[in-house]
Image 1 (cartoon, rainbow, N blue to C red):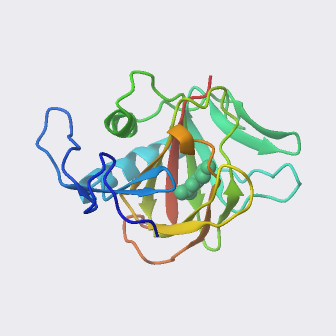
Image 2: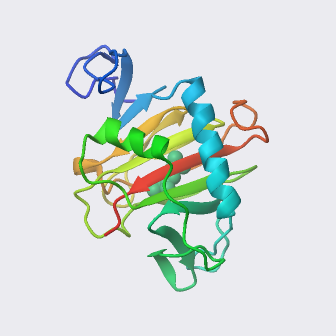
Length: 227
Ligand code: SIN
Ligand code: FE2
C-alpha cells in the first residue's frame, strides 16, 4: 500500500487539520491511495448505528433489488437508492432513473449521510443520488469506473458499514497494477480530482468481521452528483 500521507502532506498518516465544523478537532487518519482519500474511522460506533437505522428506513420504502448487468448476468450486490435519482442497470445499460422499480420515487437522502458529504467535500453542491449497495455472502464488484454522471468535476463519496471489504484501486485507464485496502465500517472514501475516473472494485467481503449489521454483510453508500 502507498505510504500513509495526510491530504495536506503530513507523513505520519494522522491528520489533525480535519475539523468537524463547529466541533472539536479529531485526529483523523487519512490515507491517500492512488489519489483516493481514505478516511479511516470517520464515523464512530454511534454514528454508524444511526446511519444503519437511516438506511434501513430507506430500504423499507425502497426495497433492495438485484439488477441485471448489460451482459445479462445479475449483479451479485443488491441495491437501492435515495435522492432525486437512483442508479439502475439492465440489458439496456447503466443509467440514472427517477423512480424505484416499484414506480415510486426514491426516498430522500438521509441528513446524516449528506452531513458526511458536507464534511469531506466542503462543497456547496450536494449529491442527487445515494446509491446503496448491499453485499451479502459472496457478493463482490468488478473493477469499474463511475462514469454515468454528467460532470466529473464532482467527487464520488463512499461510506462503508458492516463487514470489512477488500477494495481494489487501479488506474484511470483499464489494466495495469492495482493496490488494495481493507475498508471497515465507518470508513469514508473520496474519489475525486485526478482520481475521479480511477478504476475500483470490491474483491471480497470478510463475513462476520463486523457486528454493525444485525444480519451481517456490508452496506456501501455512494454519493453522486448526477446532473
Ligand atoms: C462502488 O464502486 O459503487 C462500490 C464501492 C464499494 O462497495 O466500496
Ligand atoms: Fe464505483
